[in-house]
Image (cartoon, rainbow, N blue to C red; front, side, top):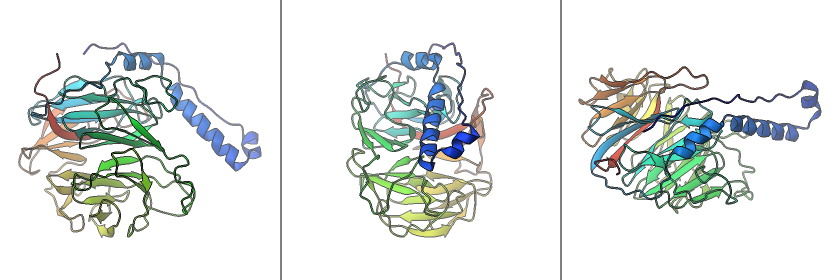
Length: 403
């Protein structure tokens, strides 16, 4: 891939005078803050960023040929690192420009389905989805058919902000802030669902959520589930759960039974049969066997500040003290050598470990008893976000690059 010359445009900032803040009503204050925040984020998208985005080829014509196993791991800057030999060797297949937690190159998620990987890029700025059917060549997922609400704007830019992406049964579904998007034909077309006003008659009142991550609940239910922050002022609650039973086209705001109150943001994972959710500290878990309708918990994990992964059908919490569980309720110790961070397994049982604060990839072929570094990189020093690897996935792609 050709290299891009990167330029940076000056960022704008907004401030409000003390007297003005005192004189405005609470509603107007909130409106201005939102307006300022959105514009500040938008200012981060420079002409150089747009040039890089426009130089990436359009998609929509992917030719899945899922024969070769591949690991794909991602980090800020649209950094995409790939291995097609069971994690032995790695290549940085794509990198756009330095990025942090906010801006056009924020990157924290990767999803896989039916021979195609997809990576959402951008948070608080223009969002694009990069995709590949061979792990080597990366293009926009979209064909360029507009998915803007009004049919205008850059056809490469997706509707809404995207926090996370999930894949299942040939469908990619995204969530972020008040908007879900889905494609059931690998980027040829998209459906969007906006939550503004969608639940206006709900007895719980106005919905206030953010940081919505999506997960596929497995082929048995075919359901996509999403977990978002609870930003309301009605006391400590876990978060908001949303469900789609029509491939991400429409959503319902669930009122799950048995999900006890808990502060902060949770993490949600599924092993195709069972859902496990942690609280912010990963000190407790809740489990659901019916795709999020009812829950059991809390169950103490015996650890804290650990990353939740699904490894060969089991749930792993990897932190200072790493633990594992087959049912999400009873937890036991993992080998002491297991690194902190996310663990991804291949079809051969090989394990890969990544972490947002770590600039390398570690590999284990003995179930986590021992690990070796198989790849490392040195990022630029960027303020506003850890430059390690944020997410990873395993799947099957074509054996060779596109012609």
